[in-house]
Length: 510
Image (cartoon, rainbow, N blue to C red; front, side, top):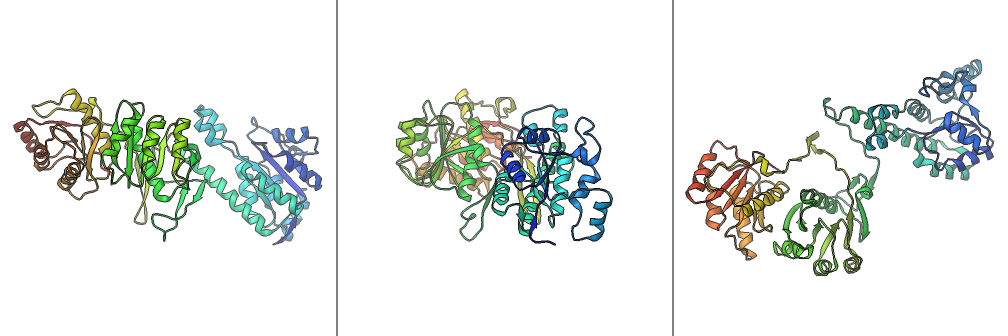
């Protein structure tokens, strides 16, 4: 292998021309022969720079509506030949194949076309064939060829081109080859996932090309990374870098608050992925005050999220609390001025972004994959097994509690009164323990549970939970139902004038 290699020719076939002009101009200044096709060829000609049409090399025109342009032995022979192999060099001469030292490609924008809602025909036409083949060939032969595989690499390539005057080291070529295979593998993954959107083929392919190194993982001795486009989803206005644990809590906060999009002003405070405070009120200020009242102790160092604009009055209340992150769709200017008073406080504007509909987590020596729980309990789902039916206000509280319960670690019980979270029992090994924890916690913060409602993420196998709830003053219960002993709980409720409704849907969150 030649370590340092002076380029004498380049093949350019790109979709995006942004940033291409200075590269072409520098190649010309270095007396590097340029080959090109179609729109790229025209772009180069319009710059007043000589370019050799690929058709002149192959003696074939672009055919099939542009689907076949570069797929030819004289192109791929020029890329794939081994320059230290006498037989390869002899065949280049025999078949009049030009040596190609640089390949610059930018693929058709398949993912953007899918995201735009284009027709299937338009999407299929954006599956690049020639370009991806050029990338794979050039990257495979990095021993002799420099491969530039994306518009994102134009800048770094131009810098190398200028500083090294068209001579690239083996390390340079290998580094760009790695980038090229990152591009090609991601591209093919996107295409496969488009065709396999219903998971009819039981195959898991995940590709994220935007990665960020975090300060550490869950604990300081663990490395941590985030792969995804954070900037697409949030505008970060202030504060320190988000940590691994911050991101987990932000994810929990966003998924919970998405249940209340378009509702009256709603505020949530989360700690360790669970809501410790939650309220819906006529104003966002009152929603925050009542959410904080749910557990002012746990709120310390929490994640705060609102479903509407945060005003100055709310910001002044928030400013009294040490919190890690504040999330809202927008802020008044004077509210921002207050919130920025703590230099490390992270302030985010949440943009409307479609979230993934598949959840993935590592498990044993593989991964578990499931559909996202998009089911939200509603009036249409409810059945009424007890004689006593909930009032309209109780129904509102029950559905409110059910939404919070769905996003709380199992086993869980959630207690709500007047659209305010009184307490929850989270992550317990028994439902009875979860209920007792929630009652004790509500009492410790002076909540009056008389007339409160209870939500459970799964059915009651015995009537003990409704009995404990009854003695605490709870008058209405929402649960999935489905136990072979449901009737025992129903009988207890009938005997003690408690309303209980079944949703038919379990919401475990392990």
